[in-house]
Length: 90
Image 1 (cartoon, rainbow, N blue to C red):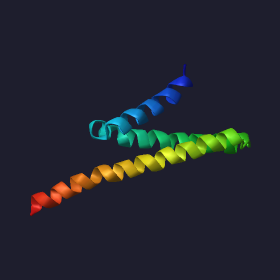
Image 2 (image 1 turned 60 degrees about the vertical axis):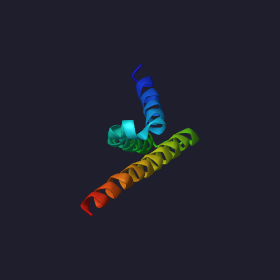
Image 3 (image 1 turned 180 degrees about the vertical axis):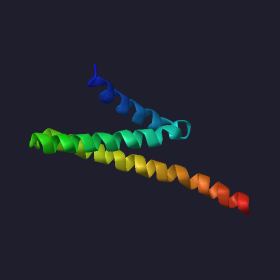
Image 4 (image 1 turned 90 degrees about the vertical axis):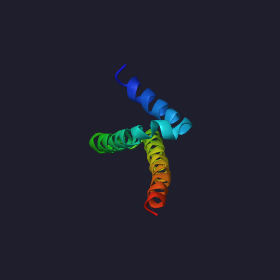
């Protein structure tokens, strides 16, 4: 159960953020922090165990891809907010 929860929570969180970004945008920093933590733990485990397998490389590339997508989503979410602030100042 301990190992299954993170494996299920992150894809579900990504799904909900993808379906309705405006509603779940408050969870973007949490998702980003969790992905960063997961990447560092996986890298640390690879260094400590001195084993770099194809599966770990695949998981790491998937985590890095998810992190990149979340950063792009966060950037796109900030654009309308900045545009509204500029229009309100004028």
